[in-house]
Length: 173
Picture (tube, rainbow, N blue to C red):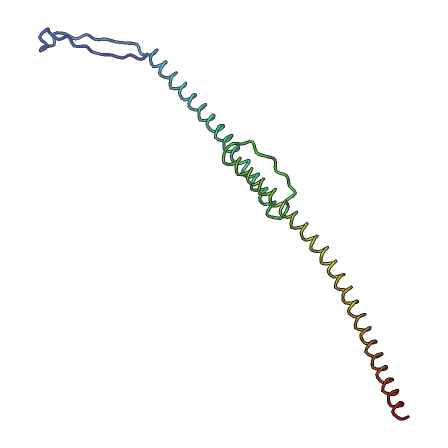
C-alpha cells in the first residue's frame, strides 16, 4: 500500500507563529494506478500513431514513386527508339501528372515527325527513281540524236564528194 504523508501548518492570525500542524495521510494506490494506466494508454496511442505514420508515409511514397518509375521505364523505351508504346493520359493533377502528360504529348509529336520524315523519304525515293528514268530516257535520246547527226554528216560528206566529182566531170567536157 502506498501512502502519501503531508503536513499542513496552522499559523496564528497575525501570521507570525505556527500554532499547530495537521498531518494528512492519503492512500495513493488509486492515483498511482490511474497514472500507470494513462502512461500505458499514452504508449499504446503513441505506438498506433507511429504505425499509422509509417503506413501513411509508405502509401504516400508509393503514390509518388510508382508513377516516377513508370515514367522512367517509358523514357528508357522511348530512348531505345520504340515509339509504339501507347501512354494513357494521366489523371493526376500534380507535377508528376503534368510531366507524364507532357511526355505522352512529346511521344506523339515524335511519332508524327518520324511518320512525316518517312513519308518524305518515300516521296524522295519515288521522285529519285522517276528522275533516274528521265535521265536514262534523255541519255538515250541524246545518243539517238548523236547517231542521226553522225549519219547526216556522213551523208552530207558523201554528197559533197559526189558534187565535186560531178563538177570535175563537167569541167572535163
